[in-house]
Image 1 (cartoon, helix red, strand yellow):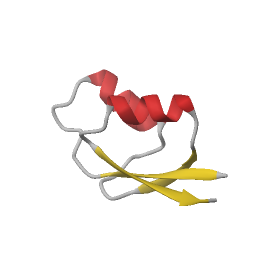
Image 2: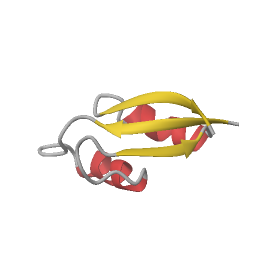
Image 3: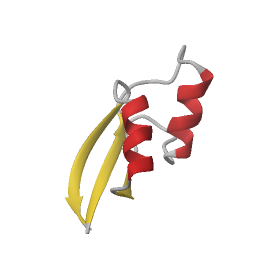
Image 4: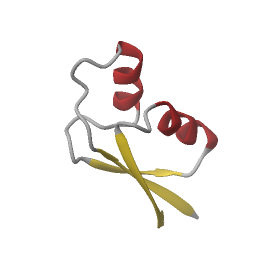
Length: 61
């Protein structure tokens, strides 16, 4: 099954509270921290909302 490796690349300082909550829901807390998530529609939607803050790579699980 495919998975997505999501890495926080930009700071959350000055960003709207809604975007901060999405980043925290993805499990990201610090810059350059990476988390692997299953490739689901809900995760894809969260990434789309914060695409300017994160970097995404597909990995094999």
